[in-house]
Length: 535
Image 1 (cartoon, rainbow, N blue to C red):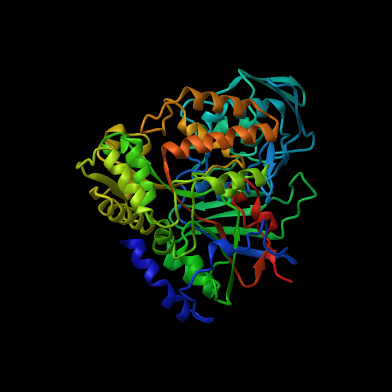
Image 2: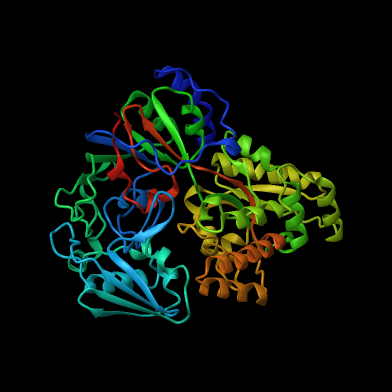
């Protein structure tokens, strides 16, 4: 109940801290103006305090690519390609990426890029970094499953050979899979790399200055930064970690200058407070129910029935203070970076995930499935959104002739559902949020492949598997979109996952600062370089 209580206290807290009291009425998500960037900064800042949910465990993104870690290190480490605030991708440390044939990518590297210690970014560093990312157990290793070899083919050239064509690799190396590290620095530090008191091994516009465990982490502008076209206005940024109530208090009083929000409560509480501004951007983030094959949820008819019966509009209102919109597919619209009209049209035509319940259709499916009596066990970790979702499942099940119970799992164990089969064997549904870092829905639908680690109901379709393979190999956008739309239809028809609500990306800024992007790009783009003072 910790976050529930924090959320209930937000409104009074903001009223007491200056500025007009925040309203409890959230903006209509369907009418939100989504922007790529906040207003451009006009002047310099000596320093800023930025809030994240919790302290990173490591700054080595290969071993932990969590959201907070990515948000910080996006300003420090650079990638071969770079995702822009409008979610398009352009060359960065690689000045171009050529495809001489469908199974070969040739990266031509910039000659002027340097690491923070002044040494040049070399082809050897690139090859070593990519092979490190591809290593067993590394956070980005799945991006390299189709890679056959990574080879230095010139002083400033790296060639990647694929086992089969891969239409997503350019986007992958705009994310964590494309970070280039200083081989010498990482190898010298060994197991200490990424821990407090050790230098980073990167080339970005900021460098890690100080990490005082339990207190704060500070990054400082790298004045010898190689790219003279990028001129960060803020000299240093100190990251502190704060839960919802402390976050709101710090922003309203001016103790902190900004935060990317993972929860919607602060956005609603701060929406009408003149001491801050809240901006919303495109996202791929969707809250879903992941069913297991433990009990009745292995039957697709029961999964479809529950999808028809659950109150998505109610979940959006109660679980997200209204700042979410009912959503039919497991990927947010921020992934539609191409063929947007085609994706929107296909989305509009989808059935089976209504905003408000269709109980008659759901009851019919339950009867066809034999009206099972075995209770559905739905997990929660006590967090606001997941608890609301769990209660909504219990209510929906009751209304269509099923029974459901809630099992509370410690927050520290909740992520283990993805790796621990014995934990999954105790529940039927796991509510969670999911996002992809690529702006292409095909980056998600491999979760429905036969044998996929996240395909817990053991959905299996040779046609589906063939479609995934073909889409991943198709570089023509219109043709790929057609295949992805068919994958979307098949995935949602079987309810491999049950999609619930889409949550927009949100950034809140103190009244004197502006500049960073509002879109989900903050996990891979150097957003701090755009932060500065208002005019």
